[in-house]
Image 1: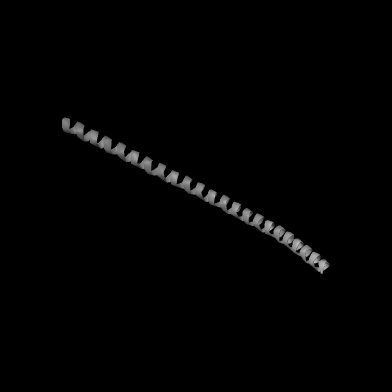
Image 2: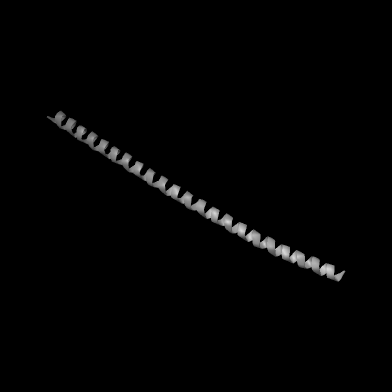
Length: 83
């Protein structure tokens, strides 16, 4: 009976070690997938930020140009009114 009990305990020990090794490999694979997904997400965010920055610069340049033109027209009208 003691031999059967020892064999049973040994089998449980081997089984638990096998499961722990398999579990570690799976968690490493999952960690790699998460890391890859994170890199992809970071790249997407960087690209979106660059595009948004470019759009903001373009809109700002257009607004500045419009303000300059409006200022020139207003100055011209004031000069014409003063004459």
